[in-house]
Image 1 (cartoon, rainbow, N blue to C red):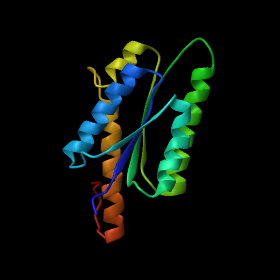
Image 2 (image 1 turned 90 degrees about the horizontal axis):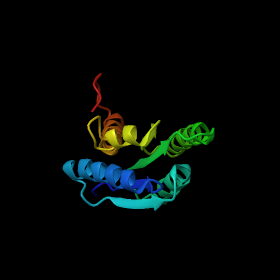
Image 3 (image 1 turned 180 degrees about the vertical axis):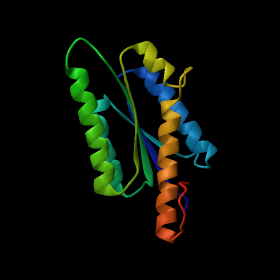
Length: 151
């Protein structure tokens, strides 16, 4: 059976969400997984709960969690970033399912755009590639393969 993958994306910054999703879906497609399920949530804070539901469904081999948090004038940024990172890590450790942290945490919109398929990097693509690498590593570990290199 072909592995299934999911993307859960925070839509608070719509343009960034579209760019991150495009990068992730392209990376999955290039790896032979063109049929990826995409799930929207309102903001980054909702990513861990959605990832937990997806992991618990048993339908997916890995999840790319995408979104953006941009610093404002209050402590909200620090609180959201820390809790989203912790929540996504908790989901993958509890479920054993790779859940990539593809959440931009930037000072400005310009920084975020540069990291969402702009001139710096494509965080959506990188999150999908991380999920694929971890699934490959898991398969290798379970097959009893030996070696030092990661997939």
